[in-house]
Length: 260
Ligand SMILES: NC(=O)c1ccc[n+]([C@@H]2O[C@H](COP(=O)([O-])OP(=O)(O)OC[C@H]3O[C@@H](n4cnc5c(N)ncnc54)[C@H](O)[C@@H]3O)[C@@H](O)[C@H]2O)c1
Image (cartoon, rainbow, N blue to C red):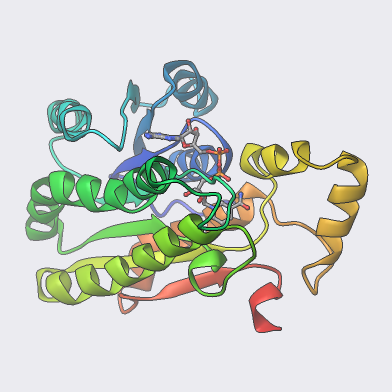
């Protein structure tokens, strides 16, 4: 548990905050004093995350689908009303559907791109005025995208997912350059194997879950699977003022997998 309080007075938005890494990020920012808009396509899980932030937490939970401009604009309106601006935007929502390009029809390709790549673009674009208003008022704001190690290297039967995450890393660099002089920093994290429901869904496709877990745990050189809090700690660093000289970077959090 952290004792740092880097987000006191900061207003934060986290997408896909109802589960896994997004939930851990929301809890971390709240634990460090931030006010968090907990946004997810799933209303119940967003509410659950908000409740976990504690009874005295001043944030709110709302339904938002990152595939929909209308839905994002509605959530941005709620954020503007409740917070009056945004210091930290974490574009975390993402989906994984496995397949080679032969197995991935255009509808699946488009769905993965809509959530994983168009989502971060749209959310950044729609929340941009609120982020820029804050940079003018306070001297800095930060966007952190959740990309993936799979955007830096590749893996069999993950064609669309890997392409979408490589796109997120590229988007990070472009946004970092375009807004550097406006004091809006833009970075991404590239997690490796992290124990969330996304990974459990992958295990569910295996004949022997326990054996799949054991095998997967041995893949990182550290010989264990990361947890959502490992990624949340890195996202909090990139979102905090102490990383003020860091922009356009892709921080790998993978127990050494990508080093091999
Ligand atoms: N788990 C891993 O091993 C791993 C590794 C690298 C990167 N990532 C990335 O981390 C992010 C979070 O993944 P996770 O592992 O926590 O998965 P998860 O499935 O536990 O959480 C994803 C969350 O996103 C929400 N979501 C899905 N579609 C949405 C939409 N259209 N609009 C808004 N919210 C939506 C879900 O409801 C869920 O709460 C994803 O971008 C994923 O690609 C995960």
